[in-house]
Length: 325
Ligand code: BTN
Image (tube, rainbow, N blue to C red):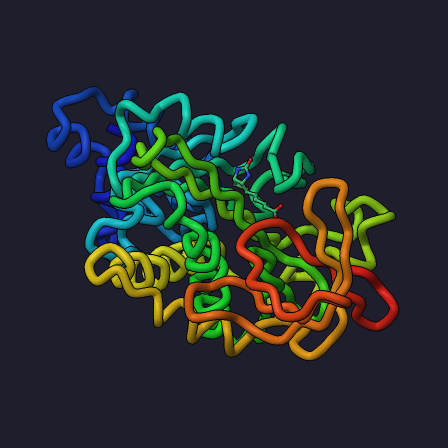
């Protein structure tokens, strides 16, 4: 009901009286007042003037249904939206709700208390300072086909950042890099049988307005936020744009089995081409020269004493300005 009251306020250029609102929803004016107060607590600036009623002055940058859905330009991506103020991890919540979710459903939380990164790392997720979301996907195909999905997520984030004048690159396969530091990452998790994918949960984490103090001191040479790099972005708009870009890339994959749009994006912003990299796969570390990206999205590395190898999983580490990213 609170959302309905908000909708009316948003549709209205002028004041609307408490009486009109209570008639509209067939509830007491005291109840209307309660909803208005809840909205104010959420950060909505609502002017209330005796005998004139209520007027919405401004809306907060929160990622609720009421704020994100009106900005979406997608057909299905993100339209089924589950919003939480706090969660341990949006990927965990998506797993818990899997029975209720459908292709393109998203879980959003304003903060995560146990945000997860790749390789068992923690994802710092302070309240209302980032985008922490998980997209539920049901692609056809076998577990071996999902490698490019992570690239699609990274490509979509990087492309969305373009719209706001933020130049980013991609450290294969999933890191979004701005000014040689990480601002975002993708955590793709799969539930599958031997030859069949049940579903994919793609977690996207983006550091939007983290301050220096939010980032552990030992990580500050490698991790940053868009705000720390001088960009003041509106999270709800950025999220809507990411979903829009992601839908384009995912639809190509789903409808034609091609990933050429994804490859074009990632290839043109691949970090570390022609530089030496370390390949990390479990306890094994090898070195080589990063050559580029294959049409299937694998990383091409000229491995020392071996020759060209197509790498489809694992991580790389590369040196930039004396720092190993
Ligand atoms: C990485 O670069 O290590 C991947 C980071 C992924 C973080 C996101 S935030 C939303 C989703 N929920 C999680 O717990 N992790 C992912």
